[in-house]
Length: 101
Ligand SMILES: [Zn+2]
Image (cartoon, rainbow, N blue to C red; front, side, top):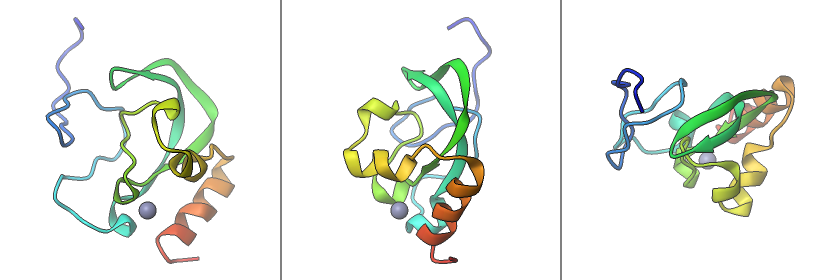
């Protein structure tokens, strides 16, 4: 925890967040908050550890997912939503999810 403080804050007062697009708390609708990111190898205490895999996952806060949770910590339906998938497939699911298929 000796690294510089990350100024980006998600909801729940959790200061640690992966380097991805962060949506301010209070917004609603998964279409506006969902995003695709490279899958972290592992997330511990909200931090990515071990680098990233070659796959991508869809994170949808509107569906109850939280970017700081490890894959093993989210519900099965969110795991399905995350994938992970190759980039093209992840983007296809993303566009479908937000209604732009
Ligand atoms: Zn959603």
